[in-house]
Length: 298
Image (cartoon, rainbow, N blue to C red):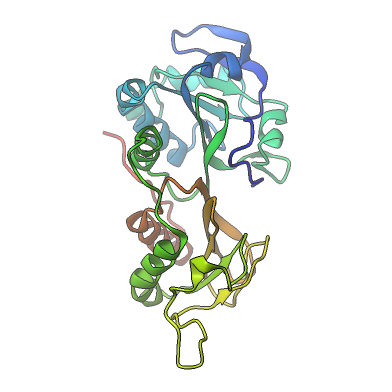
C-alpha cells in the first residue's frame, strides 16, 4: 500500500450506485467529499461474507458518520448491476439491503491501482482511507480480507482528528506502550521489531528509552535505525515504525508477506486492543482456515 499520509487524496470519476438507488455514471470523489471528512472503503467482492458484515456494520453506524460531518464511499471491482443485485437481497439471505452510502463500480481497476490496493491485477484489497476536509489523507489501513475491519476504530479516529484539544502521543510513549503489551504478543507466538523511520537513534526523542549499563537501548524487541522499508524478522512479526510526524504498524508472515498495515498522522495513537485482536484472529485464521468477521450481521 502506497504511503499517502498528508498527501492530496487521489481523485477519480467512476460509475456508482447511489444511496437513492440511482446510477451516477460520472460520480466524482472530490465533489462528493467537498468540505467534509471522507472514508474510502475498499472491499474485494460483492456477495462475500466478510465484505457483507463490514458494509452492514458501516450502514449500522451511518448516522454516527453523518454527525461527524463524514461521508462514506465503498468501492469494489464489481459492476453497478452486481451492486444493485446485492442490495436487492436482504441481509438474512446474504445480501446488504439498501445502504446509505455510494457503491463505486471500479470495473477497470483504475481506482484500486490509483490507491495501490489492487491484488494480483484482480480485485481490491480490504483497505480504509480517511480524508480530511482539505483533501489530505490522514489515515490508512489495509487488512487481510479474511479478518473483518473494526468500524468503531474508524469512527474513533475521525473523532480524534476533529478534537483540536487532544495532544498527539510522543513517539517514545508509543514505543513504551508496545513494550507493555509485548508479553501478550509473545504469548500468541509473535515476534516484535521496531524502527525509527525519520530520526537517528541518537535523536533526543529516543534518549529517554531505557538503557543498560553500556548505554544500549534496553527493550524486549530490536529497535532499529532509520529505514524506509518494513523491517523483516523470522516468524510471525508485529513491525512498528515510529516517526516524528506519523506512525505505522504492520503484521508480517515468516515469508515477509504483509497481512495488515496501518499508517496514521501522529494525532491518532495506536489502538493496542485492536492490535491484539488482529494478532489473535490472524493466527486463528491460519490455523483453522476460518474467516473472522469483526461484527456478525444482526
